[in-house]
Length: 95
Image 1: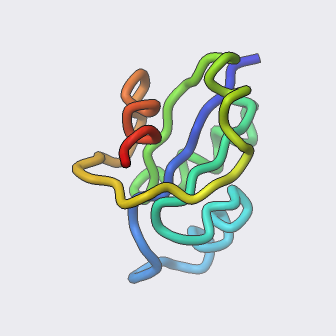
Image 2: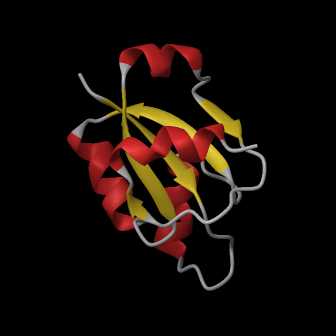
């Protein structure tokens, strides 16, 4: 099954309760947190709900094995929200 990495790009300001709960379920507690999931329909539904606050993209099994399931990134520069496809690993690797 495909895996996706989800990175939270925006903070807590102006979040409604449902979006905040969904971000917490995705283990994206604060800005610049990243989580890795299997691309199941229920996970993709949650990602679509928070699409304006996160960037996500498909990652290979090799890349998935190198990453922990959930972790904090350093400051992210110039990343756009939404489906970033191949660019997601570039976002994760920023220092």
